[in-house]
Image 1 (cartoon, rainbow, N blue to C red):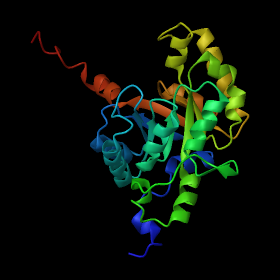
Image 2 (image 1 turned 120 degrees about the vertical axis):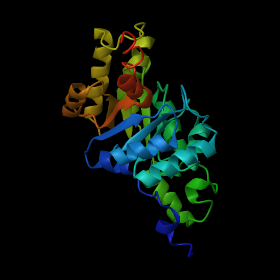
Image 3 (image 1 turned 90 degrees about the horizontal axis):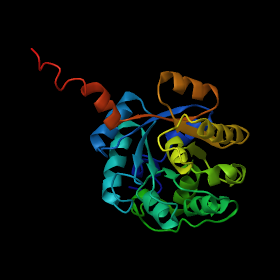
Length: 271
């Protein structure tokens, strides 16, 4: 096969999640907390634009390239994209995940623009007009070196999308500086972690928590950075879309199973 037949060599060169955001659309996704390729494929068939995999609290290790590759193959088969939350803002971890072929990385626990800059630089060959910190190797993302090197670099920088979690009061306080970091794709408000960090674990509806969420949303709407968050039900999703959210996590595998099946045990005990 000719070296420049890159569309044949690399079946997933287009990042649908990034394209949806850039055209002003809304992307709905599901957390697959079982890390199942079959479920990734199913969610893609159902029409979800991304499947979230959480390497911070659950899931495989970020260094487990084989597991991520299996999930990516399922996503490719069903025409969806993975959104992978890494465990930390560590640049080496970000590079490792991207080299498997992941295009959408969500970075938790950031509180300063400097941390965001390091995360973005780790994902790019060129960052804000200067060399980035991606590093060059021959991993799965480059089809093990089969892609033309120059085109690979350009395509990765065009298609990779980096988001950051806003989940502490310190991050909220510096949200405008964080949003000003070049090449940041989206911010995702984490209400549960934010509530816990404020001393209200589990109280996502606490007025102080809602006030900080609103601060982040308002600041983000004034920029070109997309806004992401959790949708707790249909009404909440509609409300968030109306107020500018573009990336919505609408449920999880285990929550869906619980809702569908927890009514059955004991239902016929008295028959």
